[in-house]
Figure (spheres, rainbow, N blue to C red):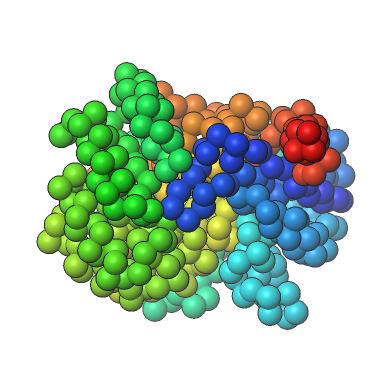
Length: 430
């Protein structure tokens, strides 16, 4: 089955109107419509053998990512799977370093999102051919083979291929934290009810969105801290809202609520700014977490070298798929910084669970300060949805990368012609 040739790539713009109920709202993204550019790879060997991939967006702009996927599809269609995975590093470079397409990246923005969607589908196809969930494919892989999937260009001053090979390449359930209780647009009544429900379900780690209004943040953090008690974990997330000095001042005033970290306190590109914030907040026992909008492995390298973060937040769709996330996970291990991925959105929990299991089983072998974000939205649209038990991710068992969506859901949420969006348009006319 590795000889299967990819004969077609389709990509569709699938959007969910989450802004109608303020799901996902934060200080910077006030009206997100959780969306994906959804890729399907068809093969010549079996009509049922397909690879599914996606990249996440928050609504407008998804059509641009779709265009980029179509532009890159020529590098994929016509290749057989064995040809790709036998030189995965070379294939990654082919996608990321085309002499003309590279100009509108390189390895960042829309191009990187499109590469992630395509490569997520390739990894899904490979895992399906092997009959394994993706995390198991990675864990079982010979270390030399796994490392050969990584492009070490630009990061050898932080991690060499030989060092990666020397990393020790093991369990059940991975700790999760919830962001679903405290979106910025939620009322106090909604926040209180959701937090109470989460506590009853066994959740012990909670994240609160902050950054729009200090007094409101103080009130909301006080409310959450009183509800969850002194021993449960609280994190706060500003979603890039502040300048550097403003971040330090604002978080200092929230220190009484003992947050474990402040997430994305400033521009996601400002490495030295994050370093200054990290240094200033260290005496308060508050770490800095970032990475969900970090473009590539090179930026993560610099964040780690500059001690600019204390928690690495990889994203399954922001960088170049599994290949690049493997590099980031291995660098984080070398710098002894825990990986606590960003998730939520559409499909991000489904995908990233495979990466955290690989990190724990084969790289870190520690759960100290390690956890993965969980948002309880839109899982019902997937063939193999994330399973949470006692506030832990349970290892997926189905072959693949858990990317495949229900075709009925895809059709209903196609933008702009799907049933859901036509109904919204009609309501707007009334």
